[in-house]
Length: 195
Image (cartoon, rainbow, N blue to C red):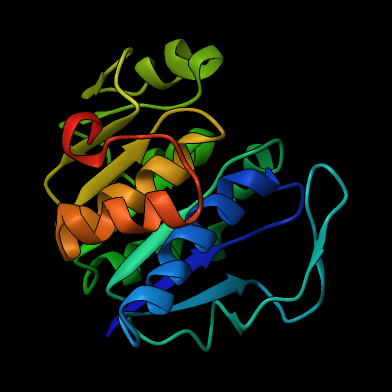
């Protein structure tokens, strides 16, 4: 079973984390006990997203065990979260054990501030591509929905978290399983062709 953690913070973009949460959890309906997906935050207090959704985290940064995969969403709240030392240290520490460290949309900036995008190819939300390109040694991919460079996987805009989730299922399991999940959630994508 793959242990997956999704980091959230105040003013996070809801679809950035709900999309991958849905995909990475849904596999358990097709292939039981494939993943354990947890929502991680600074405290166990409710976290309010950018559009008003309030979410109860499962575990705190401090108590989170080593993960296999870390998913970092973006949103307006990233402007504060990317400079938060506790979050930055959490990402750096988890990276030591994670098979993959991933981002959705402007979550890429949390990776950049943690020094994880240096020498890597990456993507982010279309209006933030130039901002990401200002980080030294980051090669910005402007057309791709999902960019995989070693341990780091970034995805482009808000809805690309769904593609990120399907991509992870494809590389963790296989394209057939990923396609079954895409079909089950009625997401129109050919995993074999697109990811």
